[in-house]
Amino acid sequence: MKALISGFEPFDGDAINPSKELVTQVLPQKVGDWELEGVILPVSFERAFPTLKEAIELHQPDLVLAMGVAKNRIQVSFERIGINWMEARIPDNEGFQPKGQKIIKDGPDGIFTSLSLTNIMDISREKKLSVEISNSAGTYVCNRLMYELQMHSQKRSISSGFVHLPPCPEMRGESLKSMSVPEVWETLKSVLFFS
Ligand code: PCA
Image (cartoon, rainbow, N blue to C red; front, side, top):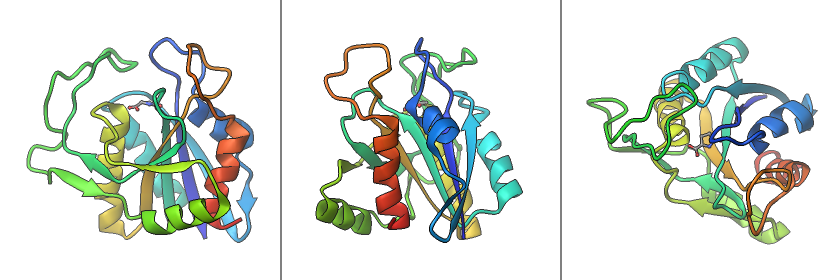
């Protein structure tokens, strides 16, 4: 079995993004029976999913987990749904700032993750892990990536989802609570790979 795990470049003036750190510094090549592959995506409405799609085509994974940071989250936050909307408070790293428009003109309004969030929450409660479910991935680049990923993986029967990470302690800014990148990885490993 193979899993592809994506992280994003830093954005919004930050020097690091814990999702990128996880992929580049912490992700092992294997966990249990799973082979793991990683890819870093540009914070670009237009180019994030095409970059992930190329990696999907290259690695042919059974599971895709996309990750990004959300500074207001204090736990590992599994997103339930991607919505067909783009509206940005700040431009992406290529200067694009949609003011409110659909991602795909005739696409469905929303699309759910194919991960079993019930199982994930059961394991999290049992192991007392810092995990929550979020019902909105926002309307920025992460939401668009999740929407396009779910649309793609539904057609291919790939299991996939998106997770927002809390900031890590090394990040700029005053977040009251943060989670270290190794701690985030231990948490994801438990709920996704039962390891
Ligand atoms: N978080 C942003 C995009 C990249 C990232 O790590 C978001 O939540 O949309």
